[in-house]
Image (cartoon, rainbow, N blue to C red; front, side, top):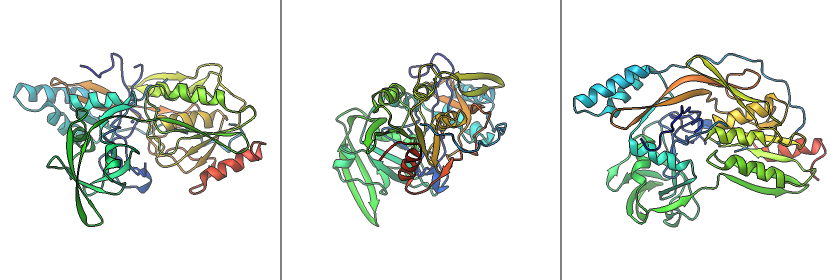
Length: 409
């Protein structure tokens, strides 16, 4: 089916998470909102960014980092049986029922908290996100514990922004269909559509119900932004690892002032294409191991390309919204002594998912294994501990670190 890679795809992004926060290899997941809040529900996503595929190969140099966490084996992750899911879907189709619903039933009983089932349209829409563009209204939203849908972020200049929508607004319905209790992927599907078509959104803000009618547009996101600080410090912010983001990181490093330091800001980065994550890590490494992972017991490895900048001082910024492929990059730079890591503990998404196409064209993504950092750390459920803990003033702490090694004013 269109949108499915012809080779195995692996998922490093969380699905059922609300974060204070998306070949070759594919890491697919619904973007969460607010992992740092500890609120669990259906993964938050945007009409602009649903589950984002991550190619190994997704935001964020170098004083010696602090003590390493001892290597540990990844804990076993619950998984749905692929054959059972496929069999249930096939039987449903034979009976004229929904293969997706049958697959969801098997997955829900398996205990596989990262598994998800998408219909063909949802999966194909998510594939568009890998290129950093989509058709929608410019909303990022997540599902709260009680099933309500809350807007997490509004893209500047988008139809939603022009209509005055704000983060914190609660979305009630889309074109008359109530959204409370829906999965975020279903909300995304309702928001998407053809460019120029209208969509009516009902929401509530501070107890007041509002109605806004907007027209969908072709939108783009900028996954990598670069800015300069005094003293020759370059801040490279990576919001997600969509196609081309790895090369943008490498270009930003090459263009940084000679003798200056880099802050690689991965806060709120929920992942993306793992190949892009590995390319980004390669900007700071001269070859060598980035991560290992297993797929149903078969061990595999990911390596950085040679020729990266190994001398420029580097600090990586992380928080509870740093997930999956972004954790892969952080773990590699930390384990290999390439970066000082500043911020708060990352989310801890270290399991691998693979997609299985079902008879009706829907796709089930099931957990098949785990990945580890170069030092052998399994991050699923534990995350990465920063070398320097800082919940507030993270950038200032990073500047202090760079100043301690002779970078900055």
